Image 1: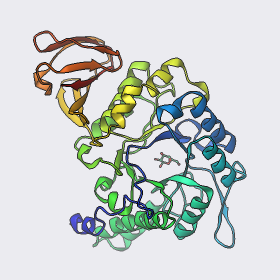
Image 2: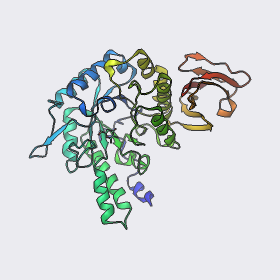
Image 3: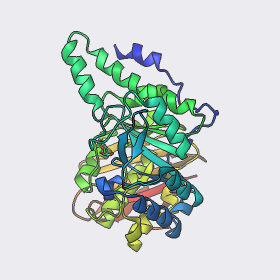
Image 4: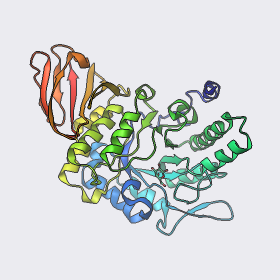
Length: 391
Ligand code: GAL
């Protein structure tokens, strides 16, 4: 049934009016939500921009500074939405972010209200998109939130027509996608509807540069891994201009240990996910910095081939995730899901590594030497060994 709707919104929308692709690589940056949530202020966003520069995050590729929900105030009689008192001058904030050589991101909802209960864009899509462009916005996260109420009303009124609410949702996302395109400004369009109704199928057609494939992450190993496992089969939908988004990074927020965060970062890179840090950048430990800014891991994420990755093998609580890279290379994450550290003999033929290939251990920053086709490495509990395999 859905195929008909999907055909209508076929792969059309990844290119902006100016002809530029907004997200040729998975977007990288920072977002206020995971750490500041509804308390975020103009000062927090400015200091995040400062910190991206001073910590080297910007040089590592993290360039978007994204305000999440709760910046909105009230609409005036002309329908113009004003920021609330925590954001006195949004254009000035955008200018400040740009003055640091960074890009500016904002958040809204296709519904009347955002998830935090603030004003959404329903009925004001073109007006809001124009205003974002005037503020110099480079990235919009558009979060379904209260649009679900409209969908539920429709479902109740027309139980005989289950496609109607789906079409309503696609129409709402497309409306903003078209409005952003009409501004002529390349704006990364980040769809957020928690992975319901297979957004990887309709996302490109509504102009989406990326789409959440899951409900919210939180700062626990269990939730992070549940999300990662939920990405099975989605690798093929990722590519230049349109990426699967398993949600923002929790690295550095304190709920996982360093091995778990290395697993988180490795899996997001192997999936070709957007890398949107969600921690307090003003208080990063050296370990956090070493995880978020590992250049080789980032290079896997940003690889020029632009293919997605996927889980390819599961043996008990050991799993293998692979992503083809440019230059006939392969990124492989070997993941020990067990809480205990252990020695796992990895048979390279079994995971598709050709005989004689060079095997580079990314986190260990060393070359690995298999013995008779088997890697014998110690895996930390909940830990990862991330490899780049080349000829
Ligand atoms: C959720 C969304 C989160 C965050 C939050 C803000 O729906 O998934 O990432 O944006 O809303 O209210």
